[in-house]
Image (tube, rainbow, N blue to C red):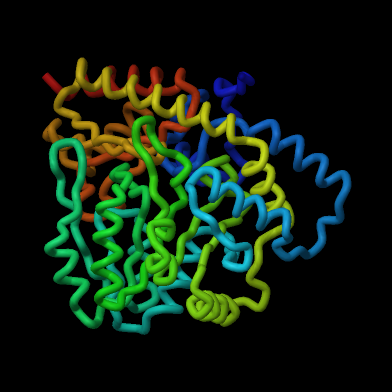
Length: 397
C-alpha cells in the first residue's frame, strides 16, 4: 500500500483562502502554526497523482475553451458505478462550477417566486441563501435530536409536503452539519412522500464519498427508476479529492425533461455554462487514479474523530459529540458548558485560537454548536485539543 503525506500543511495565507486570512482578521495575534478548522476543504496536500497528471496535461495541451469531453464523462460514470452501484448514462451529465451553483439553478428552474422549498434543518447555510435571494419560501422540516444523532420528523415532513405550495426538496445527503448518512428506508420514505405530492428532489451528495467505516451511503437516484426520473443528483470531486478550487461539479439528471429545464435555466444567466479545462481533467484524474488516497483520507478522518471523542469524554463530558456517519465535519454541542454562544465564539477564537464553523450559521437549532473540520494532519487535532483544555479550564470549575 502506498504511503501518502498526511502530515504536511501548506500555509495558505495570502493565497485567497478566506478561512486562513479570516483567522488574523478576527484575531491578529493568531500564532504561526495554527490552522483553521472551519470551511470544508482539507488541510492536506493534493494527491500526487493529481499533481503529476495536471503537470503532464499542461505540458501537452492548450489551455483554451473546452467542453466536458468523453474522458471526463466516462470517469464520472465509472466512479458512480464502482463506488455507488448506480449505472448512469453520459448524456445525463451536466456540469456547473459547484454544487451551490447547481441548487441555485434548480431553485429557479423548478419553482416560482413565492413557492416553497423544503430543507431539513439545521443545514448547510447557502441553501437558506438560495431560497431567500430568489424570493422563495422556506419550508422547514426540523430534524429531531435523539441522543447523539438526529432523526427525521416524518409526520411533519409529510404534512408540509402535502401543501400544494411546496414544490422542491433540497436533500443534503450525507447531511451537513449533523453527519447523518440516511438509510435506504429513510430515503425511500422521503422519495415516496415527495413523488406522491409532486415535489421534485434535488439531492446534494457532495460528501457521498466520505463515509465513516461501518456506514453505507445510498445515492438517491439509485434506489429505483421512479426515483431516478423525479430527481437531480449532484456530486463533485471537490470534497472527495480536495479540489474545490477547480470549481467542477457533476449534475446527474436522468429525466430528459428535467435536464432540458435545468439547462435552459443555466442559459438564462450565462451563455457559457461550463467549467474549466483543468477542472474536468482534475476530476478525471481523481476518479481514475486516487481511490487509494481517498481510502486513506477516510481512515485519517476516522482516527481524528476518535481522538476528539476520547478527549471530550475524559476532559469535558459536558460537550456532546454527535455521531459522524459521513462527511469529515464533526458536529459538537457545547451548550452543556453553560456559556452563551456568542461568548463561546469569542473565547474559542480570541483565547484558544480555535476557528470552527459556528453552529448558529446552520440555523436556529445550531446555536451553541461548533463544526470541526477533521480533514487535517492528526498533530493539529492534538494541538487544538490542548488549546481548548487550557482555555476552558479557566471557565469550567
